[in-house]
Image 1 (tube, rainbow, N blue to C red):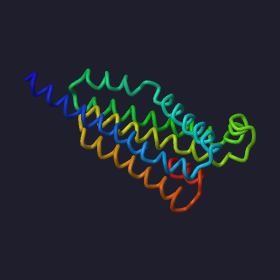
Image 2 (cartoon, rainbow, N blue to C red):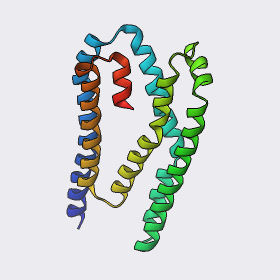
Image 3 (cartoon, one colour):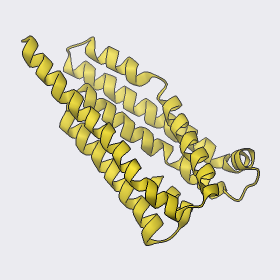
Image 4 (cartoon, rainbow, N blue to C red):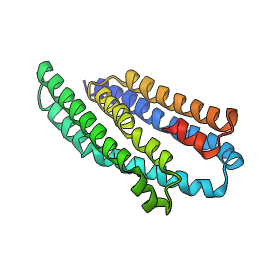
Length: 187
Protein backbone atom coordinates (compact mmCIF):
# COMPACT_ATOMS: atom_id res chain seq x y z
CA UNK A 1 0.00 0.00 0.00
CA UNK A 2 2.70 2.49 0.98
CA UNK A 3 4.79 1.57 -2.02
CA UNK A 4 1.90 2.14 -4.46
CA UNK A 5 1.07 5.48 -2.83
CA UNK A 6 4.71 6.52 -3.08
CA UNK A 7 4.80 5.47 -6.75
CA UNK A 8 1.62 7.45 -7.44
CA UNK A 9 3.03 10.49 -5.62
CA UNK A 10 6.23 10.22 -7.63
CA UNK A 11 4.41 9.99 -10.97
CA UNK A 12 2.10 12.89 -10.20
CA UNK A 13 4.92 15.05 -8.83
CA UNK A 14 6.90 14.35 -11.98
CA UNK A 15 4.00 15.47 -14.18
CA UNK A 16 3.42 18.68 -12.22
CA UNK A 17 7.13 19.41 -12.08
CA UNK A 18 7.53 18.67 -15.79
CA UNK A 19 5.01 21.31 -16.77
CA UNK A 20 6.74 23.91 -14.59
CA UNK A 21 10.16 22.94 -15.96
CA UNK A 22 8.95 23.14 -19.57
CA UNK A 23 7.58 26.60 -18.89
CA UNK A 24 10.98 27.77 -17.66
CA UNK A 25 12.75 26.04 -20.55
CA UNK A 26 10.58 27.70 -23.18
CA UNK A 27 11.14 31.04 -21.49
CA UNK A 28 14.88 30.45 -21.65
CA UNK A 29 14.72 29.47 -25.33
CA UNK A 30 12.77 32.64 -26.15
CA UNK A 31 15.24 35.01 -24.41
CA UNK A 32 17.62 35.27 -27.41
CA UNK A 33 14.65 36.12 -29.62
CA UNK A 34 13.52 38.80 -27.18
CA UNK A 35 16.97 40.35 -26.93
CA UNK A 36 17.30 40.47 -30.70
CA UNK A 37 13.85 41.86 -31.50
CA UNK A 38 12.98 44.07 -28.52
CA UNK A 39 14.51 47.33 -27.41
CA UNK A 40 15.87 47.66 -23.87
CA UNK A 41 13.14 50.20 -23.04
CA UNK A 42 10.53 47.61 -24.04
CA UNK A 43 11.56 45.35 -21.18
CA UNK A 44 10.45 47.87 -18.58
CA UNK A 45 6.99 48.19 -20.11
CA UNK A 46 6.67 44.43 -20.50
CA UNK A 47 7.97 43.84 -16.99
CA UNK A 48 5.36 46.12 -15.46
CA UNK A 49 2.53 44.62 -17.51
CA UNK A 50 3.53 41.01 -16.80
CA UNK A 51 4.16 41.64 -13.12
CA UNK A 52 0.93 43.59 -12.73
CA UNK A 53 -1.24 40.93 -14.35
CA UNK A 54 0.54 38.13 -12.48
CA UNK A 55 -0.01 39.85 -9.14
CA UNK A 56 -3.62 40.63 -10.02
CA UNK A 57 -4.30 37.02 -11.02
CA UNK A 58 -2.70 35.74 -7.81
CA UNK A 59 -4.61 38.18 -5.63
CA UNK A 60 -7.91 37.32 -7.29
CA UNK A 61 -7.49 33.67 -6.36
CA UNK A 62 -7.81 34.89 -2.73
CA UNK A 63 -6.24 31.71 -1.38
CA UNK A 64 -9.42 29.91 -2.31
CA UNK A 65 -7.44 27.30 -4.23
CA UNK A 66 -5.93 26.06 -0.97
CA UNK A 67 -9.23 26.39 0.90
CA UNK A 68 -11.01 24.47 -1.85
CA UNK A 69 -8.42 21.72 -1.70
CA UNK A 70 -8.82 21.40 2.06
CA UNK A 71 -12.61 21.29 1.85
CA UNK A 72 -12.52 18.97 -1.19
CA UNK A 73 -10.51 16.33 0.68
CA UNK A 74 -12.63 16.59 3.84
CA UNK A 75 -15.46 14.79 2.11
CA UNK A 76 -15.75 11.60 0.14
CA UNK A 77 -19.16 12.54 -1.29
CA UNK A 78 -18.79 13.01 -5.06
CA UNK A 79 -21.75 15.38 -5.28
CA UNK A 80 -20.40 17.59 -2.50
CA UNK A 81 -16.99 17.66 -4.22
CA UNK A 82 -18.68 18.81 -7.43
CA UNK A 83 -20.46 21.57 -5.52
CA UNK A 84 -17.20 22.67 -3.88
CA UNK A 85 -15.25 22.84 -7.14
CA UNK A 86 -18.06 24.45 -9.15
CA UNK A 87 -18.64 27.08 -6.46
CA UNK A 88 -14.91 27.85 -6.50
CA UNK A 89 -14.95 28.07 -10.30
CA UNK A 90 -18.04 30.27 -10.60
CA UNK A 91 -17.05 32.62 -7.80
CA UNK A 92 -13.53 33.11 -9.13
CA UNK A 93 -14.70 33.67 -12.69
CA UNK A 94 -17.31 36.21 -11.57
CA UNK A 95 -14.72 37.99 -9.44
CA UNK A 96 -12.09 37.98 -12.21
CA UNK A 97 -14.53 39.27 -14.83
CA UNK A 98 -15.88 41.92 -12.45
CA UNK A 99 -12.48 43.22 -11.36
CA UNK A 100 -11.12 42.89 -14.90
CA UNK A 101 -14.02 44.91 -16.29
CA UNK A 102 -13.55 47.63 -13.71
CA UNK A 103 -9.81 47.84 -14.37
CA UNK A 104 -10.43 47.82 -18.13
CA UNK A 105 -12.62 50.92 -17.75
CA UNK A 106 -10.05 52.56 -15.45
CA UNK A 107 -7.10 51.64 -17.71
CA UNK A 108 -6.30 55.21 -18.74
CA UNK A 109 -5.72 56.56 -15.20
CA UNK A 110 -3.85 53.36 -14.33
CA UNK A 111 -1.65 53.83 -17.39
CA UNK A 112 -0.96 57.44 -16.46
CA UNK A 113 0.02 56.33 -12.97
CA UNK A 114 2.23 53.45 -14.17
CA UNK A 115 3.87 55.03 -17.22
CA UNK A 116 3.33 58.77 -16.88
CA UNK A 117 1.21 59.08 -20.05
CA UNK A 118 -1.84 57.49 -21.60
CA UNK A 119 -0.43 56.27 -24.92
CA UNK A 120 0.00 52.73 -23.58
CA UNK A 121 -3.64 52.47 -22.45
CA UNK A 122 -4.59 49.85 -25.09
CA UNK A 123 -1.81 47.56 -23.82
CA UNK A 124 -2.90 47.95 -20.22
CA UNK A 125 -6.47 47.20 -21.33
CA UNK A 126 -5.27 44.14 -23.22
CA UNK A 127 -3.33 42.96 -20.17
CA UNK A 128 -6.28 43.48 -17.83
CA UNK A 129 -8.70 41.85 -20.26
CA UNK A 130 -6.69 38.63 -20.13
CA UNK A 131 -6.76 38.30 -16.34
CA UNK A 132 -10.07 36.37 -16.33
CA UNK A 133 -8.66 33.95 -18.89
CA UNK A 134 -5.44 33.45 -16.90
CA UNK A 135 -7.60 32.86 -13.83
CA UNK A 136 -9.70 30.40 -15.84
CA UNK A 137 -6.64 28.34 -16.83
CA UNK A 138 -5.33 28.43 -13.25
CA UNK A 139 -8.68 27.22 -11.93
CA UNK A 140 -8.87 24.32 -14.35
CA UNK A 141 -5.31 23.32 -13.51
CA UNK A 142 -6.22 23.42 -9.81
CA UNK A 143 -9.31 21.28 -10.39
CA UNK A 144 -7.31 18.79 -12.50
CA UNK A 145 -4.88 18.49 -9.59
CA UNK A 146 -7.68 18.12 -7.05
CA UNK A 147 -9.39 15.28 -8.89
CA UNK A 148 -5.99 13.72 -9.54
CA UNK A 149 -5.90 13.88 -13.30
CA UNK A 150 -2.19 14.56 -13.92
CA UNK A 151 -2.38 13.82 -17.65
CA UNK A 152 -5.20 16.34 -18.10
CA UNK A 153 -3.17 18.82 -16.07
CA UNK A 154 -0.16 18.23 -18.30
CA UNK A 155 -2.19 18.58 -21.52
CA UNK A 156 -3.80 21.82 -20.32
CA UNK A 157 -0.55 23.24 -19.05
CA UNK A 158 1.58 22.34 -22.06
CA UNK A 159 -1.18 23.28 -24.50
CA UNK A 160 -1.47 26.72 -22.94
CA UNK A 161 2.30 27.10 -22.90
CA UNK A 162 2.73 25.98 -26.53
CA UNK A 163 -0.05 28.22 -27.78
CA UNK A 164 1.36 31.23 -25.94
CA UNK A 165 4.91 30.57 -27.21
CA UNK A 166 3.67 30.11 -30.79
CA UNK A 167 1.66 33.33 -30.67
CA UNK A 168 4.64 35.22 -29.24
CA UNK A 169 6.82 33.97 -32.09
CA UNK A 170 4.20 34.96 -34.66
CA UNK A 171 3.84 38.42 -33.11
CA UNK A 172 7.57 39.06 -32.78
CA UNK A 173 9.14 37.17 -35.66
CA UNK A 174 6.34 36.72 -38.17
CA UNK A 175 4.55 40.04 -37.90
CA UNK A 176 7.48 42.16 -36.58
CA UNK A 177 5.24 43.92 -34.08
CA UNK A 178 7.87 44.32 -31.35
CA UNK A 179 6.66 44.41 -27.79
CA UNK A 180 3.11 45.11 -29.02
CA UNK A 181 3.25 41.71 -30.73
CA UNK A 182 4.49 40.15 -27.51
CA UNK A 183 1.65 41.72 -25.54
CA UNK A 184 -0.91 40.65 -28.10
CA UNK A 185 0.36 37.08 -28.02
CA UNK A 186 0.94 36.76 -24.29
CA UNK A 187 -2.30 38.33 -23.34
